[in-house]
Length: 299
Image (spheres, rainbow, N blue to C red):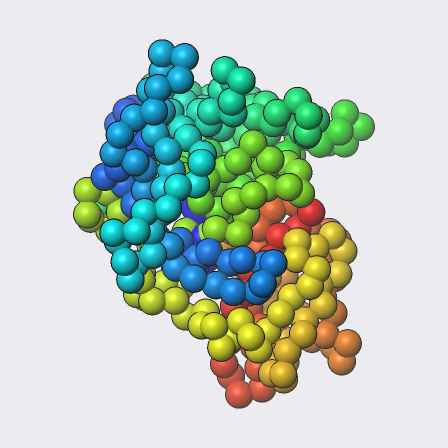
């Protein structure tokens, strides 16, 4: 979205980072190569997302629409009907009815909460567990915010080791294309878009750890036809449907951290009830030593 989005690590507390404070995210010069998985018909394809060159004006504020094309034909540009704007170190999404949704604030600090959901979803705010930097391929550093959904009042506050999401200034969310306002719900419309590579002004400056060719997916249509996970997203147990004889599995977070592994039983079931909400990578190892990678969402 490719083990990213974007889909990153370290000391709690706020400190001044020696990096640019005006990283541009909303720009037609930036391009995200994304694995797009349509779970309704179980197909995959690579898409390239960028922003429209012309601004859209709402309430005297300039926005840009997120658009995409397929690598085989860059002349066919498809709209996403989602528009964003950037104000200093804050990223907003326009939600209609003269509303802005604050998606991320890089001026925040560890321990802050960000309420990004629309009221009708009544979801939990985001809690920043720690902040760090990520070094891109061109040697520059960017601020990375690591966050989880704020627990109920009766539960302890999250710790830096808790699995959650990461958002990098200028690049976006690791694990997904952009963090949507549904991050703490099971209704995130962007969770099926995983960042493979990120370009600025034509230069490749970030690549997911498992990607060798940005425009060539290792997860082919043949693989998709042979392996199916359901339900997806999942709440408790994943069922693997496949003609391949898998031996064991590994589950990784969207940021590449290994969560746990195990043998695949005769029922082809994997329990994931203890995982927090989010996107994960499932690596399936067969008896011949080959590996199949699939992504799933946890509700």
